[in-house]
Image (cartoon, rainbow, N blue to C red; front, side, top):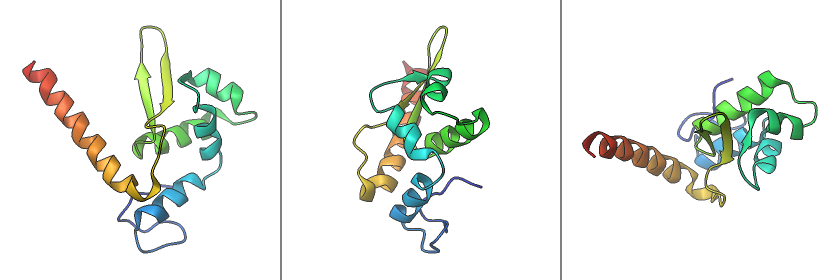
Length: 117
C-alpha cells in the first residue's frame, strides 16, 4: 500500500486533503506506537523493535519507510549505528503538507550549500 500523500486520494477520502492523508498514515497498524516509542529520543532499529512488543521486522520497516516519506521520522547514520527519531516533535496537523514541502526545500538547499561550501 503506497504512503498517503496530500493531494492524492487516500483510504476513506478522495479529496486529497492533507488531514485525510495524515489520518490514513497514522491509522495504519503500529504507526502511532512507533511515534510514541520515539518520543523521548532516537533509537536504533533493534531498540525500537524491542519496545514495540510483537512487531515483525517487515511491518516495522514498512511503517518507518512510510513515516520517513511523510517527513515525520528522520533516519540518522552514525559511525556504528543507525538511529531513528521523530522529526519535528510538535506536529501541527493542518500544516503537515506545507511543513513537508519546506523540509524537502531545506534538504535540497543543504545539498547545494554542501556542494558550494
